Image 1 (cartoon, rainbow, N blue to C red):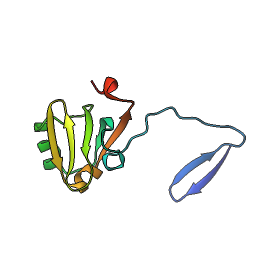
Image 2 (cartoon, rainbow, N blue to C red):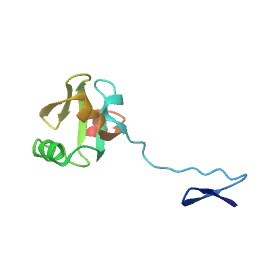
Image 3 (cartoon, one colour):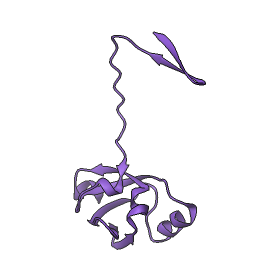
Length: 104
């Protein structure tokens, strides 16, 4: 193992070792197709918008279904449909689920 200096941070380099990290892939909500199911993992939006979405039922770990992509992006959380600007949807990171049985 050798070290290389990238500015102020030291980054280790491994030779001949394959490192596999088994973590769920979070993607922007805008990357999901219509009818896809996902779980909300992280929101990169302002606090006021986050509070509004929470009041509508979209909380961390919520499962959702994409009803419409574009402007507005429409999702379903439980029995509630929520419309939002594409820019807001792009700030929501989700983990895709296999289908309705996983999203229940």
